[in-house]
Image (cartoon, rainbow, N blue to C red; front, side, top):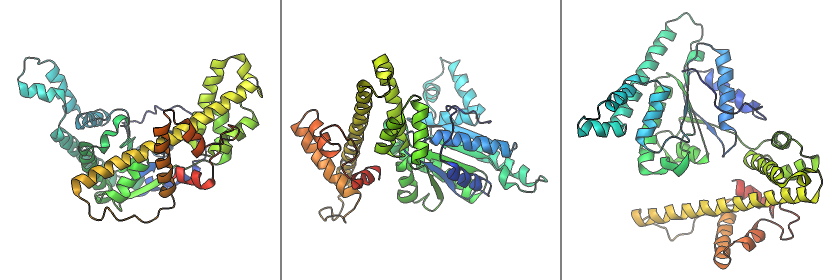
Length: 388
């Protein structure tokens, strides 16, 4: 299938090194699953769009299939449906069309109508594999000097993400295991196609550490923080009339962390449009109040994310200890210079929430100067720990 970009066409800033690295991997024989990793709004989809456009220009014969999963997958059935559409598995699509015109059919047909099953997924992957083998055989038998650059590219965007985090359930993990085994088969074992996955840090941890099947078979390319110059350019794009002082304020607080830089800039622009003409005046007190209010709210969201992450981790640990009876749970873990400060912050935040329904006092104590003049993290160690 020809790749049709669905992301907004904007200039890709500060990713030349990563683009060159992934492009060089795609120019070689498939040997590993390529993972593009980054946080929310780190620009993963935009990065993939730029990557595939460059690949299509270099090799017009290269097949590219783009699969978007983040907002669509919540079951084996929906995952299979996405693959059916992306790879044009017509017999499965026609089967559903046939069932739609047979409302009088028996219960077995009606159940089949409601969802795709594991057997459908297995058959679909088998057909895709057979197509890749035929494609590779035709390319290898051609007169092309280098057949590696003509190997197809399969991009799975948003793997393990999406609402509800269905992939973290037992059914989702089993599906991911089966699909990743297939990815290893068509890349490392048979060299049939390149597979590019995009996802967050949880996906990377799962593939590189927790999953025996994929361990050692994954190449991770991280989309980290941007330089301050690139971050400033993002502020100018999202907030066109921003002054140098306002740009310095946003980048000084959030650095090159693209998720927060872009989010704060958008929120400030939205608030200014709501506040009217007075807030639009550069240097006015109302405009300054809008900027500081948005930055403060963003820091509040950061603290809440940290608290929620540790709360979920504690629930999982408790469930594993109860279910598995882990040995040595009473022993203290080794000191961790990154996580221990956050654990302390989490404990203090929980105590603060119990004493204050709004949690405002706790927020001021942990993250910002109570005077409201400076919203920088209370120490560089806090900033490093939070990002880690």
